[in-house]
Image 1 (cartoon, rainbow, N blue to C red):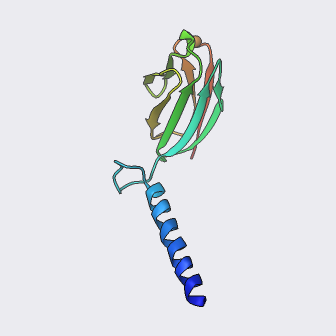
Image 2 (spheres, helix red, strand yellow):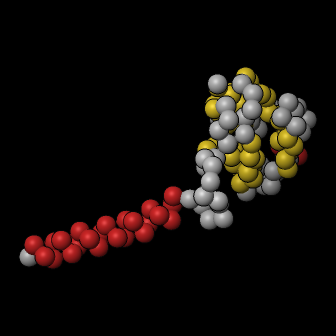
Image 3 (cartoon, protein in one colour):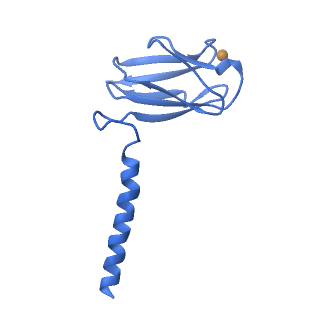
Length: 122
Ligand SMILES: [Cu+2]
């Protein structure tokens, strides 16, 4: 009886180890350096969340999900960071960056109509 319970515990342990080892790193990523922090940003007439906190020097991957096909949000622009990225409709588009300066950085649509803020803390 105790043997069966122990066998089950080992099996569960193995399954958990298998499951979680797959989650620890994404495929294709190198084993060095910190993993980027991922934040999903919904795009639908506004950026949500509209204020994103980041840490100085910590890699960031913003996943913009554009829910609408309005031309307005076809691009996202970080003027101070010199980033311009086209956003596909109903898809996640990653924008990767490593904040190298503290402060507040605006991001806007291609027409500068809707805005969000990236707040980099030291
Ligand atoms: Cu716009």
